[in-house]
Length: 312
Image (cartoon, rainbow, N blue to C red; front, side, top):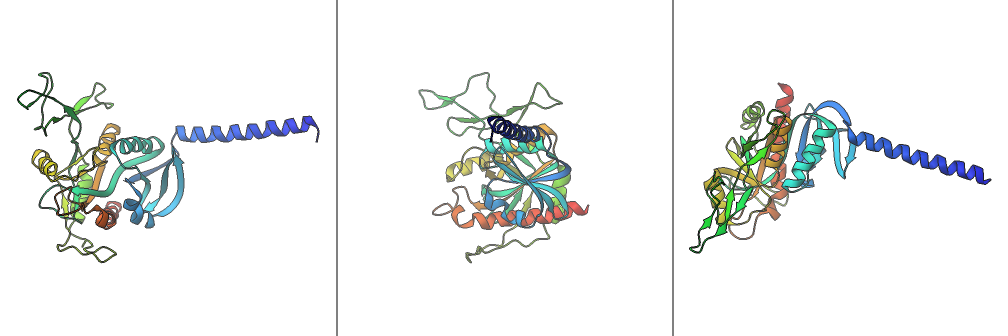
């Protein structure tokens, strides 16, 4: 083979690789699928298992290592993904979803720590609003042991030691200078459908390993949910969170996705089943025993919600 032919082959291969890379880059810069879809999101694999198994898959995309699965689920065109655990991952990948797919509504499904003493493991909470309760100022301590905030700082909620919860400034198209917010409301129409189906489902009471609850799990629609960067397994802080925010549950993603959805004008709702009591139960944290059980309870409610949503 002559040097001229070899050179031509090399140049051809380089051009093919450049073209392929350019195509991937262009695809990731724009909408990959323009079908109007419901986004269905969970934090980690076990939370999405049941929903993925019920999905008639059309196509799978990978963007920045995140897998997006399009298809139909319970009569709805959907795109499913894992946000990853944490507020940062949830915010980042919610925006990634909106940037590359035509998402009309967003549904979050997963597990949470129970904060309201009237709720138990396996219950499913569908809050009416979500707050980022660990957005805080850490105050300095005075000689007498009290914690002092600067005069120019607000104190919308009671502090927990040096931690003083704060609002966040959210910029949107309608508020380019930003607006101070603590609570991000879920979509009223979606919450109404959730309330309609809440009485139609009997939730599982036993794990696949036949560990059974003494109570029958229930679905609670409305009230508050909070999210933050910490996994909470502390009875004292749990009591503070309930007294301060009147919250039913706490998790590490929902409020971040709610904030991004609000900024993008996308209707949002989250379903969270209690895998543990955030430090309120006896002995070791319960999540190791009940995370899959709780995840499936949440997904079962989401399935019923999606069926009702498609039917309206």
